[in-house]
Length: 593
Image (cartoon, rainbow, N blue to C red; front, side):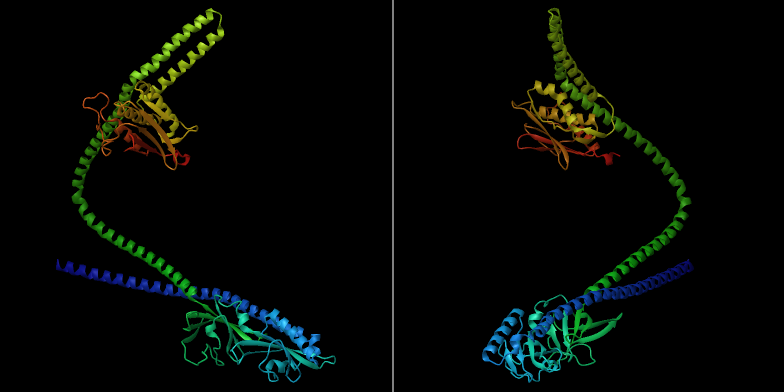
């Protein structure tokens, strides 16, 4: 016994270690796979992000180049203006100044000035603080016969300006003067400031001169170094890495700049600057994390199901071994119990069959009870047409003897109508009284209610009960059995008439509500319902003990019939009287199939 327990403990320990190693190896494999998916997804997302960033950077660079080109072309076109060639007289200078001021106002240029060969300002649109421009880089380039350009910060106001200088040539090709156009960079920035991505332009000295993020203006970069340094030279957080051929910057330069950004550059030799963009890589990181998490979740779910299946298989194997050891012992007991159960099943089947027969007899008894209540009225309904037929027949014979065939024909037509009415009453009575269970299917609810009203019409007329029933023009199809539904509404109408038997004013109202849910309401103006909770219990009645009008089974039978159609019936008290609502299912072809 001790050896068996020790062996069992060793086997359990070995099995436990196998499980631990299996789970650990699986988790490591899932971690490696998730890391690979994260790396691959991150690189793919960076590639897509880089394509979009390149397009945004090119768009910003083209926008800036296009806006600056306006001032470049303005300098070239206005350099040879005839008014600028004759500035000897003071009046000529005033006319030239007015012309330059008008052009500057229309093009939003900060200033326009015309310089002589020595760099002296001859005339300008706005007053200048430095009349000698001989050392200006743009002027020196223009004096070489080419278009000169330069950018700088004004000593007064710290405004960033961009200058274009175009030479004016004389008739023999000599340079007679230079027209310089000065543009405000801030006016150019206003058209694209605040765009989604951080874009900045670095000049040849490595200084950020133009940007849609004002925090980056005048930051500088040492030659051969990455990143930027603020104007005050303070140290800032920065790190540069490369992932899949993409340069990534990790920085903390303000809330308007991303912490992890993709860095791209674009050379702009036309304006002697380099366009750069910083794109937030957080969406790429999030997408990669989601992909890795999805793969990990799928693998873990699969692993969990596999582990549970293995555990279940092992447990089942152990249980099977235990059960097999008990099968021989329990076989005899199970055989005896099986015989006992078979007898019990047979008894229950017989009891259920007897119950179904009793229910069917109870339903039929309910019908016959209703017919008994309506017998006097039905006799009257049949006796009245018979007497009318006899009278119309006698009148027709008399008219024939008198030679009035037209009158005799009218009487014969009335006899036919009376006979049809009697046939319809008898047909409804036969259908209502037959003891058979027709299959459920499509039932015209309007016809069912017409039949129920017609069956109870004699009694209602005898007891002076008014019926408010306006049948719709079109049929309303419900799911159920026609005869059983007629019995339900006959029971409800008779109950309503019974409830109002002790009052003078009597009215029953029937309405079909064919909205989203199909229902029929039968409402009276009687005293109402005393106990709605016991309303549909068998043998519950408010009539006097020993009354011949019923045993309290009508509503219980109706409840069972409506439930068999998948519907529901409920009774409530209205402001005057009681209201019974029968809810049914619409007939649908697909459900019937």
